[in-house]
Length: 99
Image (cartoon, rainbow, N blue to C red):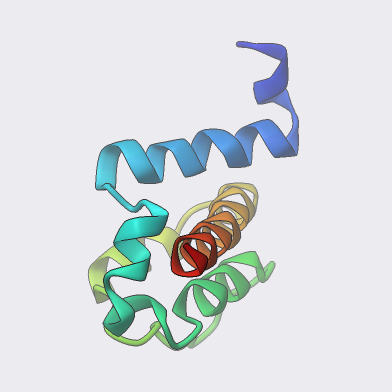
């Protein structure tokens, strides 16, 4: 495994790349879908996933319930990595809107 993938920043960058390449969740995609992202949903999801224990969490507005429930079942470390990548996605969305 590459050395950079052994630290938090590298793992978050790898997850963000996965979000873009596998799902097409680019900053442009987020900017073009305000129904999923304009109400702080990325930040809400990141916040929820970063909690050590998740009980009765709220689903981000208009997000797929099954998909989010699969994320919640991941280990705390995996959720923290996804959370960091979701925060990076929110920054990407804002950068796209500023263009």
